[in-house]
Image (cartoon, rainbow, N blue to C red; front, side):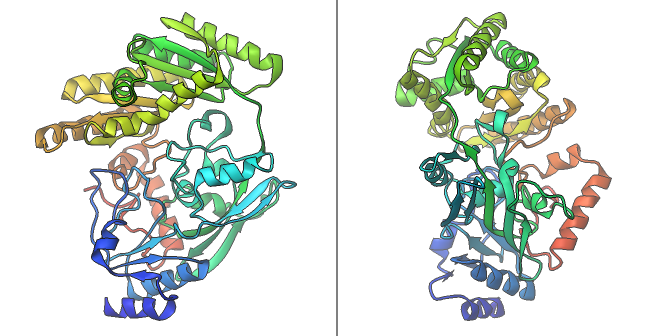
Amino acid sequence: MGGLLRSLRGGLPAGRLVTDPDVMSGYAHDRARWAPHGTPVALVRAGSAEDVRTVVAACAEHGAPLVPRGAGTGLSGGANALDGCVLLSLEEMDEILEIDPVERLAVVQPGVVDDALRMACAERGLWFPPDPAGSSRSTIGGNVATNAGGVCCVKYGATGDHVLAVEAVVGRGEIVRLGRRTARGVAGYDLCALMVGSEGTLGVVTEVTLRLRSARAPERTIVGYFDDLGSAGAAAAAVTAAGIVPSALELVDRHCLRAVDAWRDMGLSADANVLLLGRTDLPGPAGEEEADAMVRLFRDAGATWSDRSADEPEAESLFTARLLAYPALERLGPVLTEDVRVPRARVAEMLTRIEAASDEHGVPIAIIAHAGDGNLHPLLLVPPDDADARRRAGRAFDRIVADAVALGGTVTGEHGVGLVKRRGLRAEMSPPVLALHRAVKDALDPAGVFNPGKILGEPG
């Protein structure tokens, strides 16, 4: 690896290359607790597309794996180091280069944090909808890599629905621009869309042009308390069947409510086993009617109590509980995070199957969900240093993935395949489709250096 390090030192500005093992260890993995990670030979903190080009060219020349990463908030092992790799951190490429209120677009570097972009847009009366739970830390580049979604996804789509163009370093170090700034364009293959969700396996994104929306009307919040997951899932399906497209429809189960109460003493678990939170951002009378309709649908599906939130602070506190659920559970011990999506009409059945997996394998499974679009996050709770519980959790994890596929769903809704979902991907996709994926990978990554082993790698 001496030649690789010499190439990096000779081509990068001073201070960009790091070889201190203690520093590199902090960059070696994301938040997927059980995903394996190796030992890198170097870390590069890129400051420009030219830095990225230098790293890609050096890795291609020397046959070294290249693993790009943002803030490390991922949950699939997609940013985990491989033995002998170069870790390429994009966190310092964090400039908002342009916000155009006429074209309603933003041009940003990949290290821009979601909330920072959203605040900058708000100052100009604009809005960037995707809002993953980690938006205070997660970066636009990471969201593009996994096609992240969030609470607003049910109505406004995931990150990819807002990407107009990217600049990327591909192949053996070529800098290319894919997509366009116009509102629509159909010339040629949609190579820009191909980069979205590719998890750094086809190239490294160094700039993103994003579609923005006008600032929206204030939301109305609808709250439902339920005794069980089945009735809460039925309520979510009823909203869809009624033709309502809420701006949010979120589910939080009893394990999450208890964990949040133990941490913040919000008193939620005393009133409900399952909390269903809906929102509408339709302005004026239409919004009033939609909110009232959701209350009726919640009650008809079996809510023990449902109503519109009395005031904005109360509404925000309930959605804060939803955002606190994951860190609250992490305080109690290791969490194995699942991420599956099923057709919206199958949400209730999938929730029931998750409970069955929990009972069958003796593993507590908490659930938070973007119930409005069928994206469920089962969170498997495992005592530390309990090897048997870990094995049982692994079996429950595999069953949940299999059930999602059997119900016509997908193995990941927004977290990506990374390392932890490679077996599930093979269950979801036919051999010819997997062969197409490999052909695309081989064509765009001729040196085989971009995040090898992720997505299409053989399961361990």
